Length: 80
Image (cartoon, rainbow, N blue to C red; front, side, top):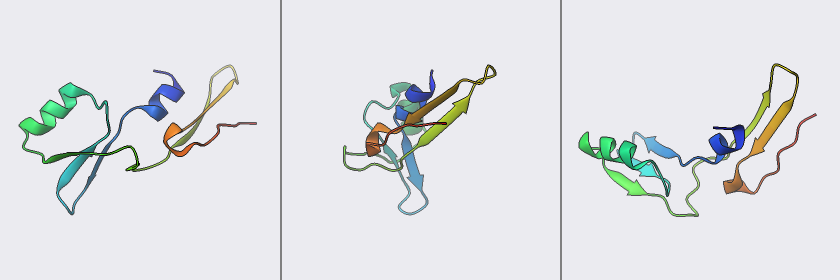
């Protein structure tokens, strides 16, 4: 998985109150099933229910810099 794939991957959201687990569309079905088997209360996030925005920068051993911006927030990646 490259940096951009990691940033745009479906996310899970949980907070203590209410005791529910929110899943983004296309969340891994095996992981979802495992949560349900453990009796987690699941709800599905709609497109407008973004839970966070991520920006990431990675420097490779050869000095190359890769940057990625979360498509949920319409950001732009940059590095220098």
